[in-house]
Image 1: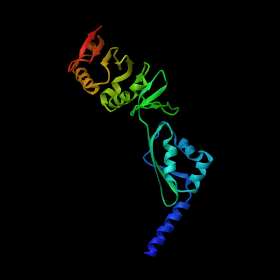
Image 2: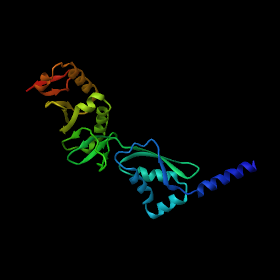
Image 3: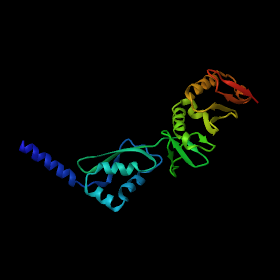
Image 4: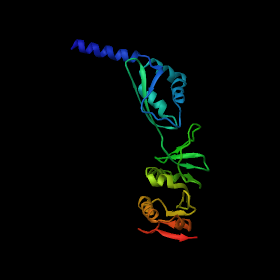
Length: 224
């Protein structure tokens, strides 16, 4: 019992005194687009003096995670360390689903604002109208649905939100898809997909000015 207790205490002391090697960081399963590895390294080495000293002296993985998670492009980070003091960091970036043209920012899948990046620009639908803060969460859910649908992901190119009316712009055609509010958008857009795939001739779609999805199980077409 004394031997086991002694070894445990020794292990705790050694881990506490172990220095973190910031020159050898392994980024595990981290597909970074909006922020570079160099920028993440700077987050860890250019913190305020107190935090920086704390990181270099102690095995404080939780503090490292907090520093990384504070970055506006990062959803979450997991940090580990091997016996040589080398850090292993897994980073998951935030996932934008709309880009707000007027404000020059993204809305991510959780309905939060996300800044643009100088390194990478996500190809997602543009919101070309003003956006109310109260709609952010709904837009996050809607954008996630569009992004995860193989057809809608490339078909929907833009969105206007005007007095709770949603106007979707589509690729290759001039018509707009009309929808009142965010309720039942999944069912309505699935109805639109059925309609679109049932049209065998593109010339029919080119003669359409708008498609209204506000009626249950119906797609109302207005021609030019």
